[in-house]
Image (cartoon, rainbow, N blue to C red; front, side):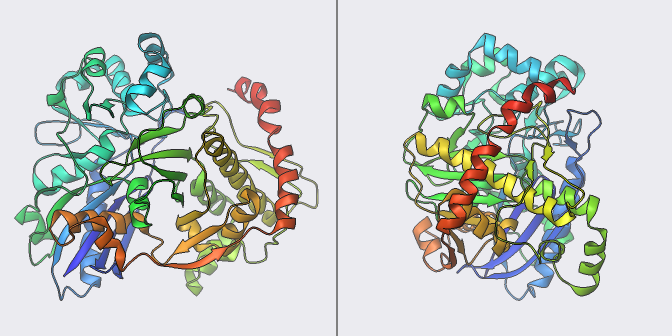
Length: 503
């Protein structure tokens, strides 16, 4: 029997078929667009995402040989995105994504109505444009006809579950990312819903991660070519699923996930809601593991900035990769050197992430000469991303969250150069698990629990959690990068006013 994990990311989806011991049998993926109809907007066609998700499930199942049945499908989904739907769970407008920054006015209203500290203490989510709550308030203010017509407001998790089973359901993990959920009372907050003009009937019912919601609709199973109708399970936020897949089932373990965005997750035994985390805009939310929580840092630019660089400047490598079968990023970075570059690239392509969370900031490239090459710019981009990582780790450590090592997952975990760079810049060892697509495997585990195959997380991880490489910081390079990092930290304060005035 097989388990399937369906990962719905910001720029693409992937279906992965695993054995129950965690071995990857087959996978399929599709990319999709982010639409930018206005400079601060970021939207998506939910039905296009669903159509492509179906293609990945069908392809992955066929690649697996279809010799054994898929017993369950668990979901790993991007967070915060919101889509109003009608009674048939069809979208009434494009999805407003987490990276959308149109909600400054709504966030100012939340500061006046609640205050940042009060909302953070209740929900674990600092006031920011990433959250679902201000997006709902924006729809209410600017699209009243959609607001009144909508039967429910869904995120990707409950939207996809509704398409597969005919009824929406959301995990406690994902609900706690919305800023509408009281993480102490473990329910939609009556106080916040009343202020927003919402009722619980317009939101999905909340279930623990790994709950069986139903079986796949027979017509859909036939369309995809499945021999049986698998159990459909609540999953969770993609980063929380990744944290499960890489074994963050005990307090203080740490994961570094590099996909479209770069995220650090640290497992917590209880909600840690210190002023330092609030002031640094670091969210705290429910883990997919019962009774545990996660502290999360976020850099939106992550792998998306590398994708931008690849598409704008590396057509030769893209063509060569297409003919040779190599990864284009391996070709881009094949001649890179381990020592610090002579450039600085502050990768605020869609504003800064934590701990600043300045949506008006922009990317800066400094130190160019006529001798500057494409490779040096690419190298400076990786260094800038990793300097941002270090600044987040320092906030966590200053909040008594002590990190002994980072478990690396996602696309970035395939780059030996970047893994060593992370160790050298942060001074923290980096380890790589056998399963680097940990979000899909975490979703697969949740599906296996929902189907009754696993009795607990420890059983699921016993045969799958294995680390295949370790990167220790080089003391000399760490010192050299520390000097560069201290200089890098001066760029944002020096440029902030100019970047804001640029519009």
